[in-house]
Image (cartoon, rainbow, N blue to C red; front, side, top):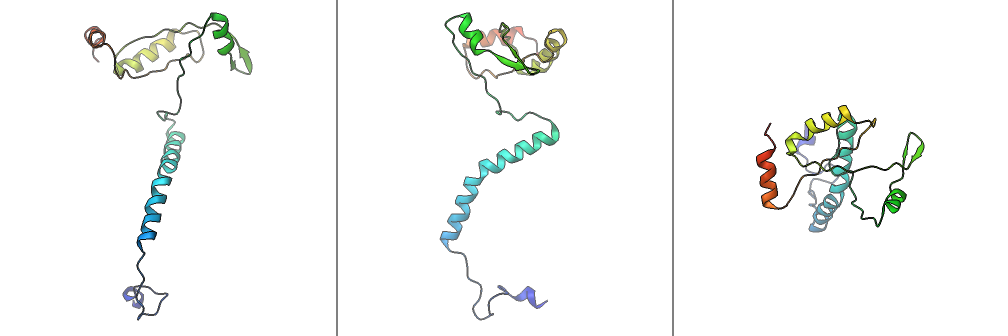
Length: 142
């Protein structure tokens, strides 16, 4: 049990144990702050891989203004099952309560002809107060 009483087993007892200076503390704090985003991202990706859940903020939506339909078709090409698709799509915007998104998504998937329909939810951060009040009054609660 002699090792319990020693402060620094590598140094002679008379010297004591040197304490880390401010430089060391500053280095540790700086490295911790710099590594936090990387470690957080890795933890979220690991959680997503294990649970199969989506990590919020992983993907983004780009709203693109096009001069005409042909330019929109040129931009909107995508691959589906290894084939280049150039179909025309119509965007439907549905405003509802956030609590209703799951129900809406289930309904759309049940009637949509695509194998994987595009259903994306964005929260409304701000807007016309009268319109937001109209949604509040006209979309039933859970």
